[in-house]
Amino acid sequence: SYILLSAHLDSVPQGPGINDNGSGTAALLALAELWSGDEIPVAYAFWGAEEYGLIGSSYFVNTSSESELSRIHGLLNFDMIASENGVRFVYDGDGSEYNLEGPSGSARIESYFSDHFEDRELSYAQTAFDGRSDYGPFIAQGVAAGGLFTGAEAIKTSSEADIFGGESGQAY
Image 1 (cartoon, rainbow, N blue to C red):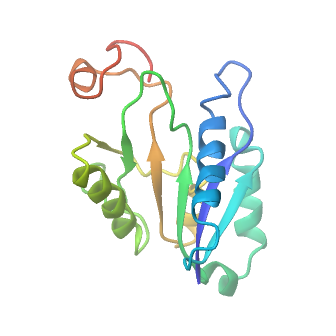
Image 2 (spheres, rainbow, N blue to C red; image 1 turned 135 degrees about the vertical axis):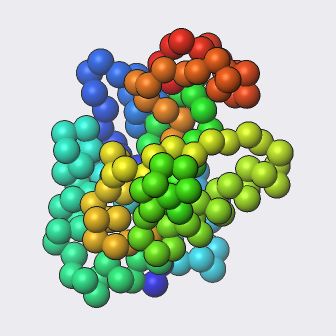
């Protein structure tokens, strides 16, 4: 089995491509360099056409056998992780905040990220695990997943600005 790290390569014309999703792509490349030669079995996926309906990740899931998908110990998805006005969001894999629990193992992935931030005394918040990004087709097939996100078009609250900095009343 292996851990699958993923990010999408495409962007939308009206959005800042460096964040959505140059940031996730850059993170995967940095992790590949960091973990080269490591004992952890890791694979990297760079999806196409996320912005047009999760096409690349859906194709992968739909053309993989159940046996192939069962080899994925967990999917870590990185989508929009460098917003100038973002929040350090961790996907709510255990459903404790948004009542949308992920497949078995997703809670453990959430706790890895949460523990990492807590150990470093960094604030974070949970975000809905609703299938909006490339992890969606995986969780629909029962693959454990999780990841990070800094927000998209939703508006940052004043309490989030107090905790994470940035400007309240503006999109993440």
